[in-house]
Amino acid sequence: MNIDEFTRLGAATLQVPELCEREEDLIAVTATTLARLAAPCTTWDPPTGVDPAAWHRIRSCRWHGNVRALIRTLEAAFVETTTGGTSRSDLIDDVAIGRGIALWEPKEHHSHAIYASSVDSSP
Image 1 (tube, rainbow, N blue to C red):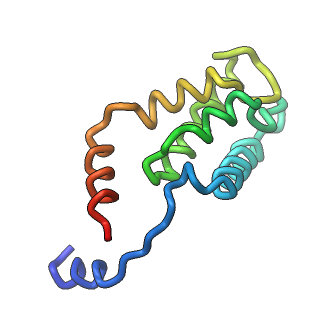
Image 2 (tube, rainbow, N blue to C red):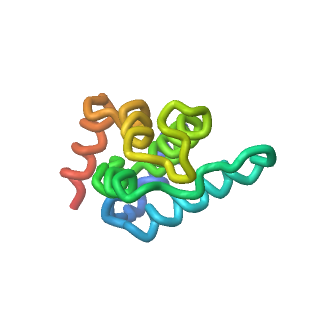
């Protein structure tokens, strides 16, 4: 990216609440991701949603504004649930979501400090 492009990108700042504060978006991302993952399943019944404890864990994770981390977490939990990594069920459980979060949204990651500093320094 050259300096001219960088300057144009910085011309406007859009303030968007963090993903954890936008429950409607959490619902939409979760529903569309699970539907996308379930669509090609023809020989077995895929999970149809997440259990209440898993949903609580999704809602309480900060996600650092990153929808991709939520999607990757759901993908990992979907695979774990359908391959018997946890108790096979029609709902993704808290254990599978927790493992996905540990993989894709770890508590300690260098990008979290970068993100936090950019949020704290915004006007």
